Image (cartoon, rainbow, N blue to C red; front, top):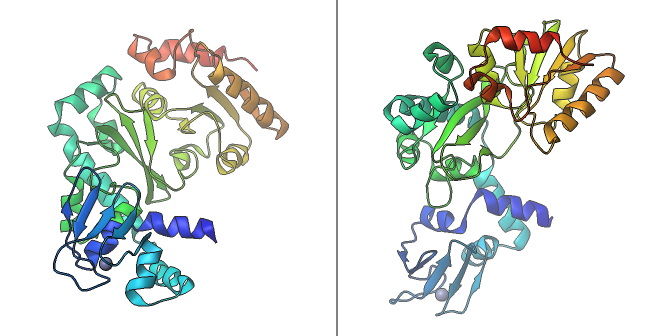
Length: 329
Ligand SMILES: [Zn+2]
């Protein structure tokens, strides 16, 4: 039960609920708003809502608590009834794919307008405009997604629920290169690579789907598996078409099943980092694949490289092909 409560509260921040019910609060400090109390009659504001703690307190009537408590008091409902009421108001709608698709399209339109984004792609060696368009690569400059999507009829609550914006309305993928992730024809998540000082990798809440672009390679007898989307893009740009990506070294059960669903050889091309974590993951995965009757080989890149940096540092398709052919069991 307590887990459900937390999930429900995450879907709808208290401040957003109050605003939807026409509460007007003025900011006091960084994370607090004050306004007239919706729970008792008053002429001077004494109702405080804290966005960081997601709670309220009224100095007039002495009531306070979280969103569930507020619904109980304002609508005279029991705890359980309040949960049901909130669930009904915030249930995820199946048009989330449409919102994600519109977001991806919006970010895609931004890409060309931001030199910092283009220069980042340049440092990662990605320059083929046809491939960039095919992969739907975009950029989240920040500050404009909310306006654009609410103008298209999506509520703040829906955008927040999908993890696209935070409680202040700012883009969750702010200053990130954005790749849409598909399941079949539907966008089911977005991956954002930071171009600034924020931590490198970010996904929206929810599943990442299976292996990236699996539909294109599922019938290939030889598949190159990489761990990052920039590795994927670099190989595609170099002319390799039998590539897929696991979005990290740890494969989900679905991704592992996909690799095992037909007879094939998988070329594991994970990062060769100093701490060996990429190679250890590749070794483990190779053993698991072999146990399922799948042939697995490890492509050994030069020390300190991933497939993306290999090409950025001047490696070419011929050299990479040589490494693939020399791949070890
Ligand atoms: Zn009050």
